[in-house]
Image (cartoon, rainbow, N blue to C red; front, side, top):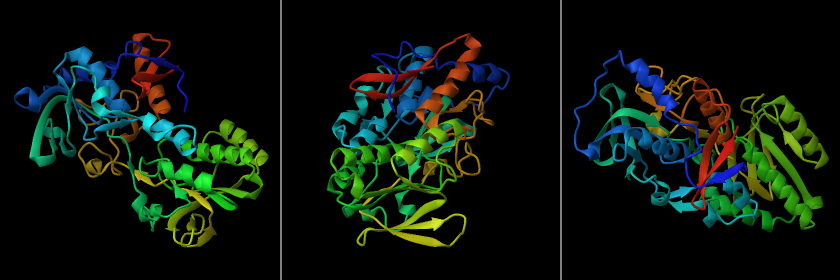
Length: 381
């Protein structure tokens, strides 16, 4: 996913404080309980859960609103990855190292980085619990925990990645194996999958397929490749305009699409992939592969499942117009961890945030989608 521009600061971003402004106005009549103010290390005006694109962006905006030292980000990872680049890493066009930066280097100055993992949320008491039974209280909470990968829901994975011929662009541990599998391909089935769950960047499973096809054409092996896209969906893409265009490309490049085929098992030692036919529950098909790219099942982070802030599935239950929680007015959600009726992509997040800016009379909007080479990447609407 390419960015429309690059800036070295957040100065051109639409003010993220709008999503809190509505909540502040509503809460003026609530008089909600706030934990007694403790030392700075265990109480913050704004607490952000998650140090990905959404969390980093919102922490920077909130710092400008409430001041340095009053905003904290809870994020356990020491490394921040610009994940959209992994499609190009798997396709051999970029090196994995170029997608990585120390988390400290992308954390906004004046924002406290809490290097821990959230273990529980207690919005009724305006606090969260971290590892080692540490409690952090807040006035406002922004949940930006992203989406979790579940390779283990496919029988034979993740241990199957120890074998050759198989990769996945969705994990830092397996993306380079995709490029290796492309290079080692000689002839036979090249299978690309799409799971029966929500997926972040739903176009990425197809992007690597088109990159692979182009690479094999360039290296003279295309005629020996039977490229298959096995998708759990009933369509190639959810928007008809784009689906029609993609079907033309698929026809032109002689790619086979098998709809309602969900990957349920990988027998990596035999180079076999087992797919369930979703139109015929319990009926499976076994496909031999010479190359396999796996898009894993995905779902809400474990900490959100059965949480007071989540819906029945586990997504943060927010208002689609304001990103404000439907029950707790001082809680907001952003990005993939929410139940917004959009695709789980940075582009969809931009459109939602642009909607929030309309009351301020803005015609255009710029939103971060990642941090790369020390700069913030953004889309403009």
